Image (cartoon, rainbow, N blue to C red; front, top):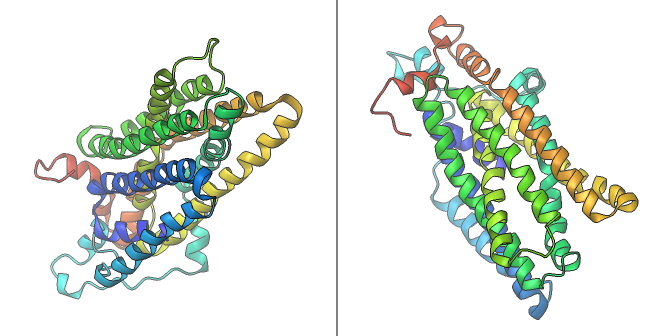
Length: 339
């Protein structure tokens, strides 16, 4: 569902709105993860492992049916500046009928920004494999926190992740719309925040002795989650901006696969390291290598995003030289633009 949802967002919202909107959706994902872990940690020990799935699945099914009943289908490509120029003066004829095919699917892998995003997704999800799969158990078993306290620390991290996803998207959108070097500023903040999250999560894995209080651990977890999730909504907005309307769903499907590959490889790689060096070393390695590589790759995005976004608009406009104009830069010049 996620690839289709983000593809639809690209048809509903303009370039100068997409990061902010993606932050709302990313925050909702993090809220769901937080609630899921909280429900499983609190209800699982008393009601059994099956009941948390029931609590979570029921509202999901109801909301899916509601969305099917009331959400209209947006006009594909209606928010693209290149297509607006192509149909300028004959808006009533607007009808974008391009569809995905094998050549367009393969062309996804020729876009430099796409390749960098896919690579950072694999690297960036290695640490999340630790957080989602091992951290709660590690805190209770290795650091001897109670189940409720370890759940509180992980919940604090997830709350921070929600705040980071929400605020990070709006910050990234502001930088893109209002600063002179919008894409470079946006990706610089994304990369720096990812790198700053590394020592904080390593602190949770390797805390000093005596063990800090629950409040300190929760505060560190909150800030770590906040910094680590600034990148997420902005990455998704970048993918929307550098791909054609008919290829976005496929692009996001590949992106999700890279995410899942990182999350799947994470536990597998960590397990092999644990066998030789122990849990602490395995978790520390995953966080240090994964998010450092992710942060550096995101910093490189600053050199490709604007060029690839202009290339898409030029293609959509049919080669019109006017389409080399940067929609985000035009938004910065328009004081009435919505962020």
